[in-house]
Image (cartoon, rainbow, N blue to C red; front, side, top):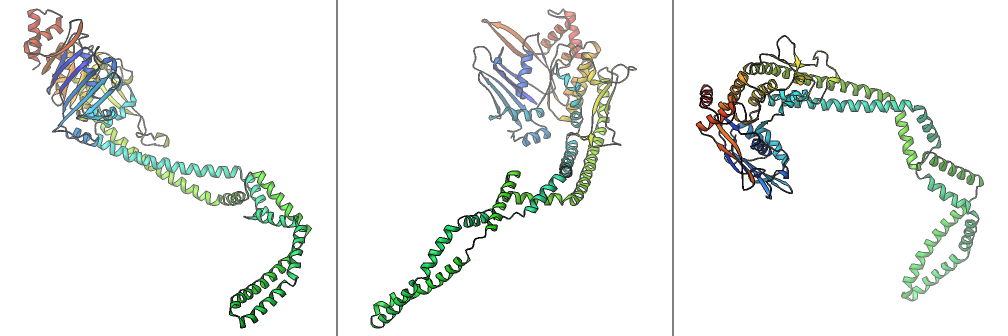
Length: 556
């Protein structure tokens, strides 16, 4: 719960330091005295956006600090999950506003606004005069139902969402195969023609280079033949004979002069190498032949390959790969049909599982809805609204289909209420606002606060538009809530103010040309006077003071 609130230089709140207790604390004061600034300060502690315009004129920064005492095991667990460590059960939040930026500190450590926003729902709940819009939007109803038993619903929802993802993945696989089959069938004749054309071309990897080399030989045959003849003549000269004679002469010299042995050995080795080499060259020269028909054949082949490359805008290796992929595609229809059947079966199985998990979640939500109906009806009766309340589910669980699958479950729900017996149930989203709306909101607060475990609730004029006995019943309900949850309520209603365990008065004054707001905790007689003022206006008479005193005494 909130133990202390410090505010410095926030508009007309120059230096406010207020201690809060458990139970029911009333905040009252004239219109414009600064009550809304207290709410704004508390909102800053819970992560709302800060504005530099809020900084008091002439000051460079403003500070709002809140000291919270955390006792709820559920809240402690959520804070630990968010990475927030407590110091002896205490949590201190600071918002520092400057002209340039806003700083967030949690237990003295700089944090982000996003981190503060994550933990704020576990610290306090603020109801403003405009908060009723939240229960007028059916989009919020499923999350409100889930709040009654968050652990169980989260488990069921996680199981459903996992099954839902499996279904979407299986459906994606099936659709991909179906699209592939459709494309193959649509373009089958075209692809078959391409495949036959490429298959008939008998494309070979590296063929282009081989053709280029052979064409170069045939196109330059005259030059090659002439050079080959020169080489032949050189080989057929007496070069090897002379070398042989030199080898034998050196062999004889070596018998008399050892210095020639090494030279003779090298000449001998080179002679036989050259003899082998000349023999090979002769064979190659002998194999050189000119075939005009072969030249025509190669030139035609070269032209055919170039034509295919232009037509398909692919290289020969790419054409070979494309041909092979066409063969695979054209031959896969039979296996594709089998794959489609398997994929469809997997998709239907995943769909059945998702619908089953969704049904489990929906049945549990319907069970929670029955308890919500009972609780809300009870709270409304306490608040002098003797009317029916229903949670209606519009999904037929006996005829579920794929279109019922949604991210948060299968359900579409709405809240219905019969504010006037005999007039029939009406959607809560279409009900008129006013005192009736305020009491409905308070009934929801009473229900969901108990489920959420939040230790502090701030009510900003939730009793607007209420008077007489209805106001007394609202006061009773707020007091009932305060038995388990710290309540801080801004009110102009005397019945509500009379039920407060503590009473803070917010007053505005002008000094030295500057406006100041102060917060004062009232004693018993001061409280009586303020309540009498709420009943009759300024300067209450002794009888009005007695009426206020009776109101306080009768509320105990």
